[in-house]
Length: 146
Image (cartoon, rainbow, N blue to C red):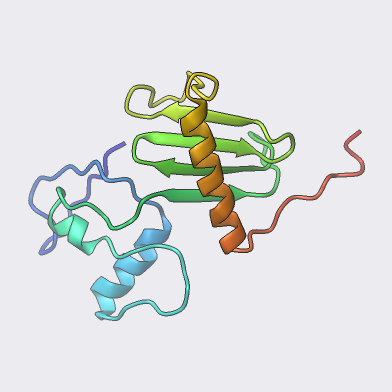
């Protein structure tokens, strides 16, 4: 889904951007834009101002990562990585993976993990390394779920 933003003095009058962004990027963007300061520490996210100024800009990141080690009404614990047009989900209860090509399948209807095991394995390794580097909390089995 494209990012469409109008910010007087920063964005062009009409612009559409296809670069993937996440909510955490807004913290960095607002901090840098409103206070002319750079966020400190190791918070996730990057400043989107260059992207807002020129929608053709490419951000300096290889992938977006998501980690939900808890239960939601709509899903069990899951981690995900989006790299380019590819998105891999790893369900943490059973280790099952799903792979989607978002350009061809934006609704994530066709799981390609079995048709593209090489891509699935590569993204899974990337996701697991990201979790290890970040010391991500992992879910523990619920003893009352049986």
